[in-house]
Figure 1 (cartoon, rainbow, N blue to C red):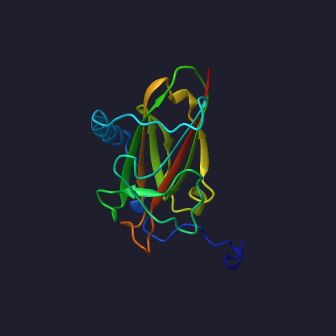
Figure 2 (figure 1 turned 60 degrees about the vertical axis):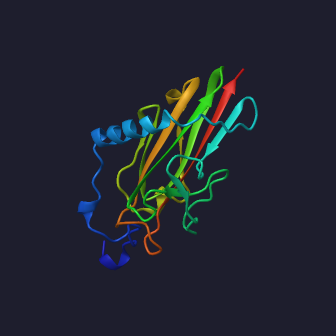
Figure 3 (figure 1 turned 135 degrees about the horizontal axis):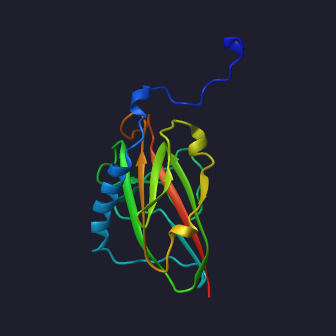
Length: 188
């Protein structure tokens, strides 16, 4: 195929060497340090009804700072885009939330995730999303949905999102943000 007929790449320009997968050992180390912070955090719940629980990213998440939604990012109902409040211009963010699921069979557990550029998501110590480093708008527009039911349990649960921004720290020229919504349905 001649070069002039190729479709343009959706990747952001940048060196390929900066797009390495994060080792699982490092992810688990971040998870364990975040979990220690949760022991002092009260458990909060967001319920739509007795059977439906919806938890979206906002400033009540540990270490979360709300950022303006970039027009290229998906709109996420009942969630806002956040980044780390410890380093608002950093190249990665770790945000987390502890929540409780009441007694009953967990019928459904879905995680909707929109992130610029990529993320690792852990629920109760298990990796449920482990993105490859991508600078591809398909990752954050229109977002992705994951079935996480098997990782949820009755009682206390933890979700930790480690989001990364390719090309350096978050800025107007290199935006970064993560929005997530967890929808859980419990049978009586």
